[in-house]
Length: 114
Image (tube, rainbow, N blue to C red; front, side, top):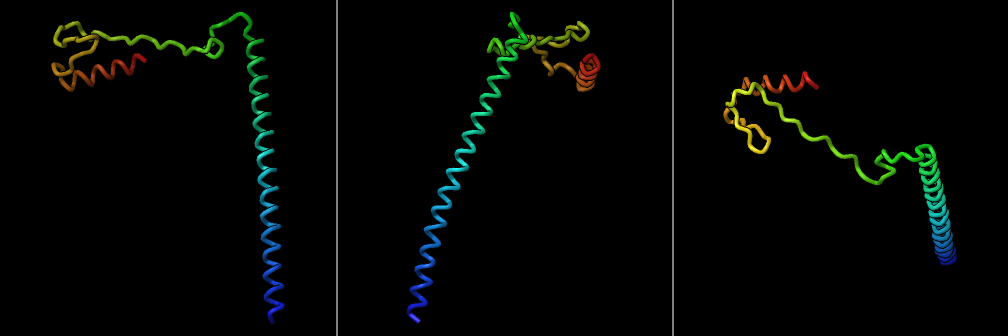
């Protein structure tokens, strides 16, 4: 009876050791695979950049090539009717003096112009 317990205990320990070693090997394989994929991805990105540079010889209009973001367009402020009812403060319209209906009308005009 004791021989059986010892046998199964040793067998369990052996299986745990083998499982631990298998896990180590599997982790290493996954790590190597990730590294290879990362290297391939970086090489692909470098090749794409080189192709873009060759395709755009002499032109520095692209924001990617210059490394700068494209400037945003300036805001445009529209004078509704020129009534003088609304006051502009720093380019903004004071909406306190405008009725809701007029605001809706202005919004519709802006939407239809776009």
